[in-house]
Amino acid sequence: MRRAARFLLLVCLTALVLLVAPAAAQAAGNDVGRNLGSLLRDYAGQIYGGIIAVVGLVFLLNRKFTELAMYFLAAILVGWLVFSPDQVADAARAIGRRVLP
Image (cartoon, rainbow, N blue to C red; front, side, top):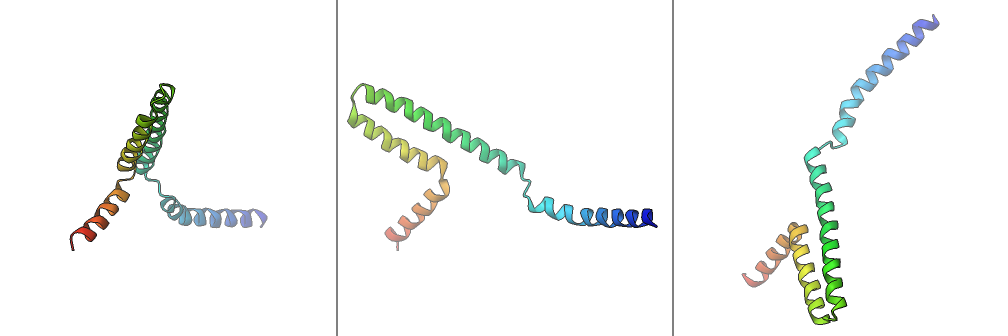
């Protein structure tokens, strides 16, 4: 009788796992393309920040503070345009609504 109870418990647990596992796998959001894109975007942001820092250091060492400030402003603008196009689109729509009634 003890073996039959264990077997019945095992069958019930297996059935429960088979019923719940597909829903859990779908809820986890296994979207390889989106995950890879997010990872590459993070790497690109880190590389971009490193390049900005190195070139900014060159301006700083040469004591070209005005050019350094302009470079950082341009880098921020380009970074904003490249790394958050949805915010740029929202800002453009808002400006368009204000300018064009």
